[in-house]
Image 1 (cartoon, protein in one colour):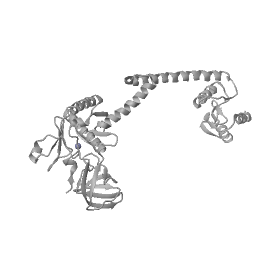
Image 2: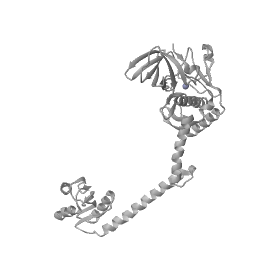
Image 3: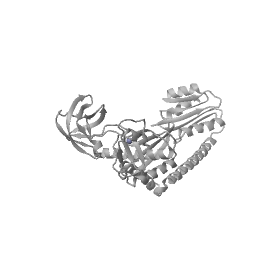
Image 4: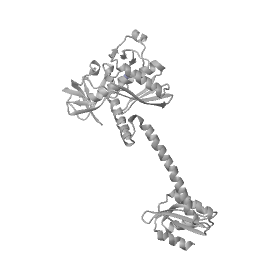
Length: 384
Ligand SMILES: [Zn+2]
């Protein structure tokens, strides 16, 4: 049976072993060692990665029956002695996340009785799913309690209770357990059945940051980060906030009210622009009262203004009213209408002759044409 060095010394980074199996598979080579410090994926904790003999890269480690399979990019001779090294930065990060998650789940369980029903250590975020509801205020309390506990720097305990002892033990577990059960206890914090690797004392977790909580199935999903990941996340968020504060000349703790002010200003400007535009369109329309035919070609109107001006014009004129805006290079937006008229044939012809597209109701159409202003004038000259 393989000697699991990650249990005898969780902090072992380098070790030697004898190769007892090496087989080629689709993704590379499956290597079996007589002893290993590579943690295989399990208990919610991703596997270790690292190297064998410095040049063979281990990219995946899985448990298969009693064996631990190291997926590598090169073969190694069976029977040879090898020196191995695990990616310690990755492992220590996972230990910080995993231990922090136990404490958060433990404190929530103790205070609210909720169970951790899903745990995922993603490459960015750690998520914990609970079978009960928590709000942001409750989350802040749990975060504070967990961090205050972490700073007391308690030694982590690993227990292997007898069957009778196990019956008496109050511990968290996803299922009923028998036989040799490994219990991880943070004294006064949490007791939980677990096969993962943990920090030796809680101070090494450093910091727990509960990032968000949202409804998920019958309960909530918490996003959380610990240790170095928490620091890097907070650095990134702080950096963004600092940029916002500089851009808005606001204090770093008052950026949201500065953004709110900016949005209110933008909203009232929008209203002012709409009013000014309305006045402008009404002014233009005043020059065309009581006409049999109106053709306006004017630069700088938005498609919405083109539509609105036409709508005003057909209310005050009985004939066809057409408004264009644009230029010869980019083409023109148009709207054309006639009160109670039927312009379908005209629009069809216009789109055909002026290389356009668009349509609408029988009495009102809008679209665009790709032609010169002169061509527009000529088209309507012929139609008058
Ligand atoms: Zn665990």
